[in-house]
Image (cartoon, rainbow, N blue to C red; front, side, top):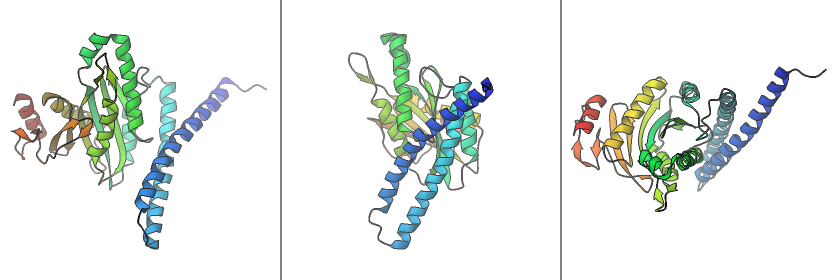
Amino acid sequence: MEPDKTVIELRRRAERKTVLYDQLFERAKRRIKTNRELALVGVKNHAEHERIELLYDQEESDASDDVKRWADLVVRAQEHSQIDEKSGLYREAAFAEWYAQAVSRLKPNQIAVLVAFDLDGFKVLNTTIGHTAADGILREGGEAMQSAIRADDAGCRIGGDEFMVLLSHMPEETDVRAALSRLCTRIGAIVWGQKQQQLSASLGAVIVRAADAPYFNESRAAADLGSNVSKSLGRRRLTLIDGEQYGTYRLMDGVVEGQSTIICSYDGAGLVADLEATPEQCYHEVMTG
């Protein structure tokens, strides 16, 4: 007897998930292997060597579980048309679901980073090169984002030239600016027009911790606020938000530069917000100062 359509579709779904899992887990294993080798350089103590090996064995096991969940989400998103056709990234609803799952699995010593950004001058670009060519830029932007993040992270196109990225399950001591520099460098590698102008972005990033576990809309509002601060200060900037503290950094060739220990700053001088100011007061100072 011929299998019915439901059985056939379930088999096809399982096959798609298996293929996607194999591809993503291979990427994750390569990254972990590189990090493991770097961590073991110069380690001669046998006990320390074993401790590091165990840590990376556990990371590989955790990555396997994360990738399985991610592959399941992607397949379901594709089935429900939740993948944006122009960029190949999540649409907002699927991305919000991924955010909720990722944040719920954060450990006390881990953080996630939600990033919101616009492509600088995209409206002018759209008018200059036309909609079809501009759609090509969006595709390149989606590919750049996917190549800059890990297999268990996720990217999203909100609409127009608005994007979001979630970097999940990173150690507390992670250099967030270095991680975001990789994303900015990939975006800056995209060029357009006869003059080969570089693409750039104005980013807002909010650090999310397990103890806070804010809802997606709360984190998105904070990241959007940071992106607006970056744009108001001259674009090509990253505004990093950690609780009540804001730091704004310039992007030079995609690399996040400078030191910022105050809530808001403009190239380290000029605008300086009161350290006791709330984010809303800080934002008001930036937008009106």
